[in-house]
Amino acid sequence: MAGTELAVTVRPAASDDVPVLLELFGGLADYERLRDELQATEEQLRDALFGARPAAEALIAEHDSRSVGYALFFPTFSSFRASRSIWLEDLFVLPDHRGAGVGRALMAAVAARVAPGGRLEWCALDWNELALGFYQGIGAQPMDQWTTLRLDGDALAGIAAEAPRGT
Image (tube, rainbow, N blue to C red; front, top):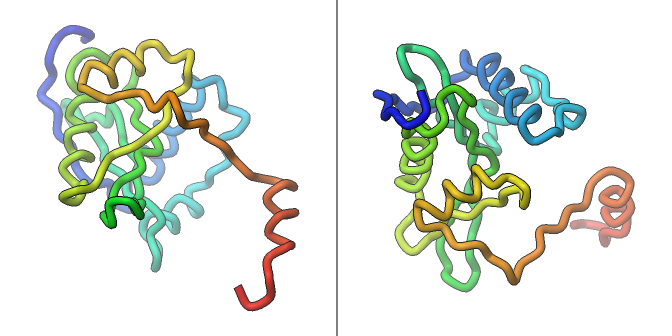
């Protein structure tokens, strides 16, 4: 399908899509060589996306009634711009549908949700030439001055334990 534009539908994910999203998460985890880090369960994902306080939103791209990709994102805030923005956590298209406009359709749908004055930001693995080429092809600029950092596990618990009481 690569190179051929597909008739793609992009729609918000619904609670019934949780199993499909987890399958797509598995595809992304395999592609990024991170399968051992995929721990999400249907219950956790359903609560995170559709619970009382949704943490994120997801869009699903479909072709011929088949889910072929997804985008997962959540709101952020820019203090310098005093505006809402979006962090794109995942953008994934099944391998046999890449190069056919699915990723671009998902990206456009996420971009349409950015508030005026806001921005859309994300990370890509430095070895992922396919993704980096796609992103630069739609006008994205790498942020060379920034380094992504992460706290999790024992390091996160350790610093959290230092929080002043009442916070």
